[in-house]
Image 1 (cartoon, rainbow, N blue to C red):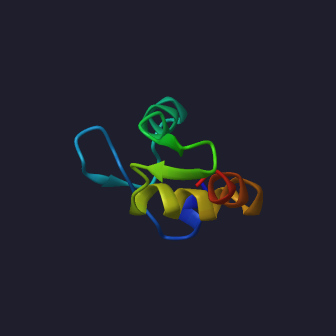
Image 2 (image 1 turned 60 degrees about the vertical axis):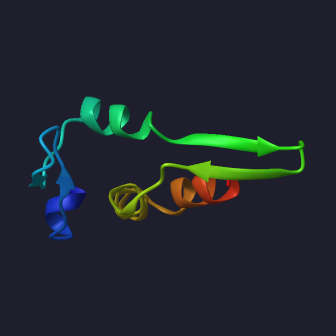
Length: 71
């Protein structure tokens, strides 16, 4: 996996770092991210933490840009 190749880990459901999380768990983990729109002029990305950023970098520029443009 990209995590293992980069010597990175992602927290599993128990919070322990692992290098091979299931796709289902990764998708569930990202479901906690929300976009707050304030007065239709400003958006704020909520609940984005370090494991999210780490995984986005490994997924590539498209995903980093998608989440950067969202908040």
